[in-house]
Image (cartoon, rainbow, N blue to C red):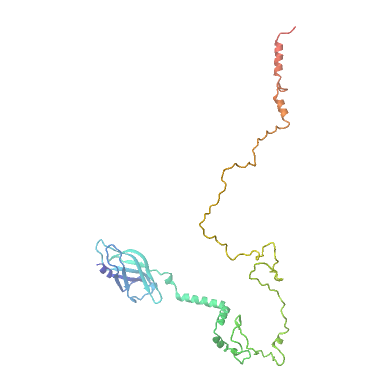
Length: 347
């Protein structure tokens, strides 16, 4: 029953013909139930399409449709959980749909899978090749001297001879390959510098030979030797400073810094490690008897009393005594006068 249900599945391409409606083109597929049927489990179904069954471009396909002509018994259902549909052309192989579906499939309900174009499918290889070509030509034109030099220096001597043989010398009578040595001395801009064959003169204005005592140097004016210059050469490294000449890079010996390594040379070998021994390494700890502490250097002494303020002690004693300010209001004298007035009069 499961195999028959799968055999009746169909796969169709939904194309856009550009007139605001779609056309359905059914593919010639061979459905196969790959995994053995088990109730309530996930099964793998393969739909193999026959190549060339439908003539359509990838840009026209907007979605896929999976249908089946079999109705399941009541209480049963089939759900398409995931789908992976690929296509292949003469130039590429890519996914038409890949991902989760989670849609049920029945005789009256089909499954629609959208197939939009991604970045890889929208790219135009012809335009990319044209863009790369234009960039390459622009780069070569901007660095023509560099690439000319690379081509000439890497050219085979035999091929370079054929190239030189196609040009004439300045006198117009011989090929360039017969008047120069087939080796490049340097390149100057868009030109090659090659040595002339010894004893050959290409300039018709220059007339010289050894018999007349005229040399080629006579045509270059008076020769002056260049002035001598001093060139300081760095040393590879020294263990001591020394005055080796009048060069500014040399320094005089400074006795404030040690430099006589022959007196105290650095040994080439490291310090020897003591041999392994089983003798005891205990050392005498010395006399550990407790003793009195040393007499402290700082002693606490009784501080003397602070001196009284000068000039105020006499005034304070005067104010505190029963002196001139003891009866400021005269109350005592008035009381004595009142007693005498009320007392008997002496006759």
